[in-house]
Image 1 (cartoon, helix red, strand yellow):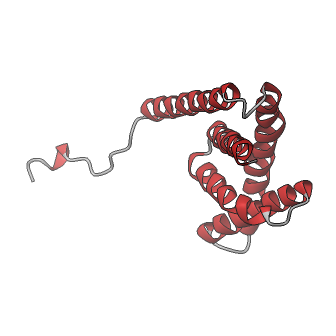
Image 2: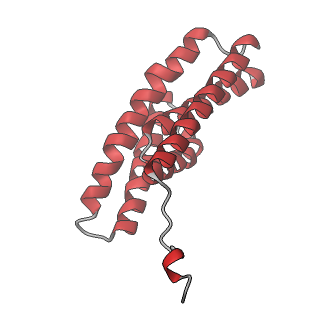
Length: 155
């Protein structure tokens, strides 16, 4: 009883600490992205044009539209009919289906739906939990860069 005023069961990290960790995480992923891209470039697996295309044309607009715009709108719509958890799941799944379908159609390869759907679920979940679009863009860029590097070695 004597210690009860000193025991705080509602510990919450400070906003400053959370922002600091978020910034450090983003810096790590940006540096990792640069490292992966540099490895692909020096190993002649990736051209500088492909690296720039992957980041500017692919990763940034795709994630901005699908995660930062479409997914929250879908979740918001389904909250009219379901609870928050179900709405989140439906929003992530529908966004991932659309994301992977567009990739499969644009590549004229329907089997890509399965290869892209799982990472898309992951990106959607990460965005839902962190609300950090820069982190998701970096994850998308890293996976694209690694995929292109692996494809060049397998071809």
